[in-house]
Every structure is written in structure tokens, then in C-alpha cells.
Picture 1 (tube, rainbow, N blue to C red):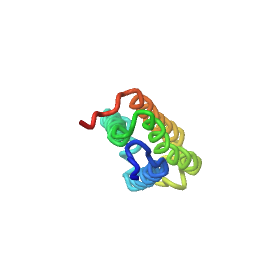
Picture 2: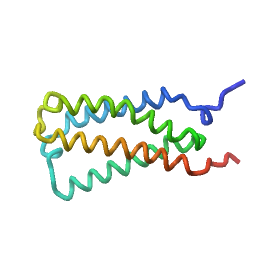
Picture 3: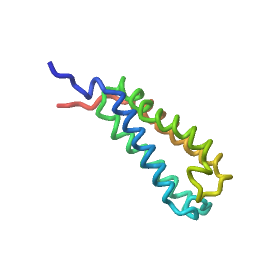
Length: 135
């Protein structure tokens, strides 16, 4: 008897994927020039909007194959490791991102919290959509 992974997700795999995404994003911020991170012009706003859109699209693609009752749990499992890790990153912001103005720690923490909320809300919305037909 085989298990249908689309019907019974392994939430640990979603959590592992979320942790990997956290590591990649943190490394990307660490190597990004400070002038890009500290920018406050329209291009910085557009970049943040693009990133948020890509996050939503990624979560939709990640949870869409699952049965509707598992989508919210998978999105929450994906978001949780990053939320926990970013709590520590925000507290040690100046040490982890020494090239960025340390006064931006609050903005960083708020942005991360909003991003993780976006992931969880996307999972909740996706849980209300019907399953794809396999026929």
C-alpha cells in the first residue's frame, strides 16, 4: 500500500524547506550591498513588492497540490522555522549584518514578521480553495 503524499504531507519536509529558505535569504541579505538594503526610494518599494509577490506565488505552488485540509498546516510548517530563527537574527542584527545600519533592526524584524504572516495567510486562503481535479 503506497501513501499519496499529496494527501498526507510530511510537515517536517515543509519545515526543512522553510529553514533552507531562511538560510538562503539571510545569506542573500548578508552579501547584498548596504545601499540597496537601506534604500528608501520607489525602487526599494518596488523590490519589496516583487519579493512579496514571489513569496505568495511560491507558497501557492508549494501547497496547491495538497488536499485543502493540509494547505494551511504546510504553510505554517514552512514559516515557523524562519520565524523562530529571525527572532534571534533581529536580536543580533548588528552582529549578523554588520554592513547595515543597526538602527534598521526594528524595520527588519517587522518586515520579516509581515513576510511570515503573508505565508501563513496564503496557506489559509489556499485551504479554502477546492482541490484540483486529477481527471
